[in-house]
Image (cartoon, rainbow, N blue to C red; front, side, top):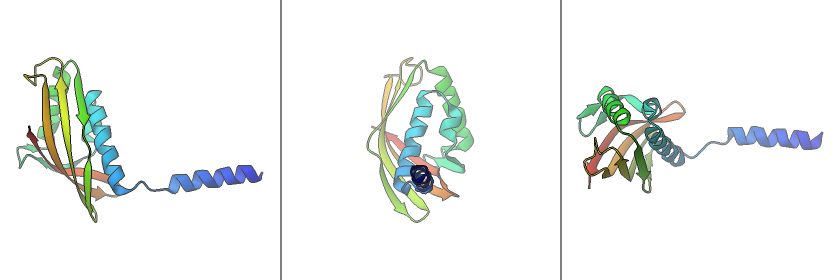
Length: 140
């Protein structure tokens, strides 16, 4: 009985353990990249804020969704490779910077079948989750 009680206590405590904010943001970015590779738009957009802006107003959330649909549905195989993700926290806000390489086996969307991007993203806590509200990317 003591072993069962101890096991139950360990399970309860591990369920209450909170992932550090920087690790939560890194994990969310990785999950979004995996969703893009799997062509699951909803998985990419799940952590994008309703008031998202990208590349200085070039994209809003709806525009990002349209671009993703067109590119993910049109490409035969999409690959996303992330570099190191650096996260700077400032209370309920954060900035994450990383490099990303996107590949497109079809060559339809990426003429060279590959693009290397430098990405800076702005995040804010909404409840217990982090959502990306801003992103800027430039091609190398």
